[in-house]
Length: 257
Image (tube, rainbow, N blue to C red; front, side):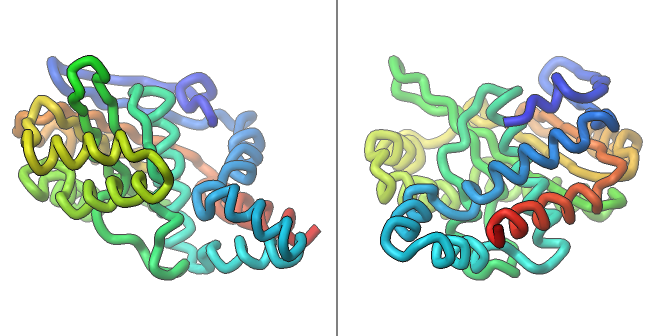
């Protein structure tokens, strides 16, 4: 979608198993990122085939209304959704995992945050029929605070640091419903029969903020003393609120054209 590393100033630190990276959006890339997000946002909320079917049966106005009912109205939900979308993009573009389920499509209510792990990434070893999982927390806030990072750490450490069983079953069920029976079966086999080991799991903490996340996020990163590989990424956009507002307004304007 949008190569965050390729279109941002970045700096990083790492030790044997863990890495921390700061990404700062260049001012001249703001409009490009906004426009890319406007293009991809609908896909995170609703299956394109579902929209296409409504368009064919009921016309453009009905299809537009269908998408509008999925778009959150609450600012902090919008902010969190953009953070999750950017985090998912980073996972696929920079870490080599796939994110096979767009979780936001199954939200109970457009103005409610979803429960469970924010994002689960997957790498499949087809020859060995094994899976590596990325358990990710995406935090979006104009000003990053210790409380936000403490909450993220607690969420990542739940279930011994492994993806929550109900979250994996959610992914497996959605994959089955959308026709990917093979991956659904493999996830259930790994979870319910083989068992998941620490070397099959990696964590990502992804923050999207206007403030400089380095001190607090690196402090949180350095404090981790567990045995699961950690990646911590802070994506700083000075015009954080303007980006969020511009993306959602752009989507709504497009539906009203």
